[in-house]
Length: 464
Image (tube, rainbow, N blue to C red; front, side, top):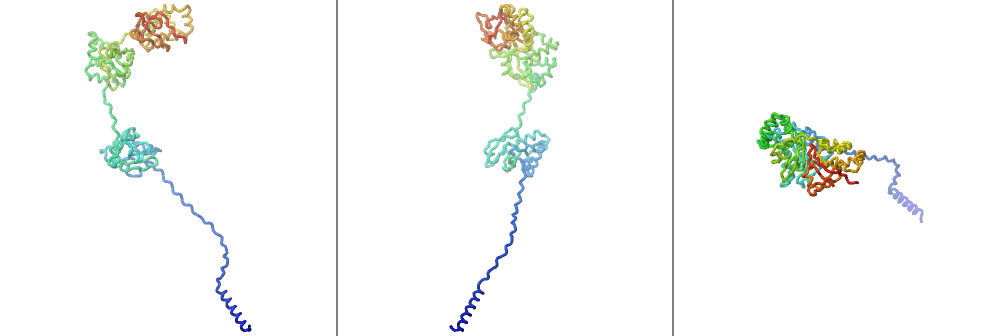
């Protein structure tokens, strides 16, 4: 190849290389690394928790319950209805209170007990939402009275008040708004009967009794709180007394007072209870006997002809004759001492420290062994018993029955429980009455606090 051609070829190649280099993209230099700054993520501010809202808080804030709130404050119920509860309040609006007769709200704010009752009648224990309210027929309020609940035409009524807004939920319960004030049923007022004296005066059959009560200055007593049970003789009953007796008694006030007090028992004893008693202690301190014979009730020998005339301070039972208090004859111990046939028995009672007990107000029936009965015991027995007080006491208590059991009633029994707690047997053979194996030889020695029946041998309790 000629030199000229070679130069042309080389030149062409150089030009092509330069063109290729010129057209190639520039190589970017490596960037210098820049340190990264930490990213700060801001925490969101916590939302403040809502303040607790009690039923009272909601009522105050609502603005439609200003009268209700004022009433709660006056009745000092704000604290109660702000407590944990839960409660369901049927809340009357101000418009509801405005429907009451003029002056009613002002009067209630002055009569706190009545206001409190009305407010409590609007509150039910527990949070009862509307969906549950409609399932009830009634609910008991905090007053203890019931409210009626009914659904009519899709409306809910509490008594006659319509529920107009439901389920205002508080932290301690729920409010249902009603369109009228609920008034609790009026407590039935007990009729005023008058005192025993008032009734006796008004009746017209007790003129003599009233005159006697006034003369003895007992009208105020028998008009007092009591209660008393009066066995009241009619004018006809007083007329049965010997001629001149009433006039004489009106001149002898102490004797008249005793007779009148003998007709009065403390407490209100209705007929159903009278017939369960054998006796009753009168205000005179002496007992009247009570018995039922063929369906008729007798106080001593006076028949009860009308029962249960109620008074504000007791009850009157009408009787057909005047009760005359018996003269005191002494206790069963007094009679035993005075008799002279019971010296060993009396000594034993003294040694066993039973004299006071058998001289008390209780009613006792004593089966009393005579001195001759004690003498039948083996020689030395009495002396041994007087030295053995527990055994002596048991033997003595085995001779005593609680209550005054007269002979006519003894013969109806087959056994009786003694004060020892052991039972004695009673039988009638050939017209004779036996207590265990001891024959009753004298009956019905009446004492102020019981009766003595005399027996011919000592009763010995069964050995344990």
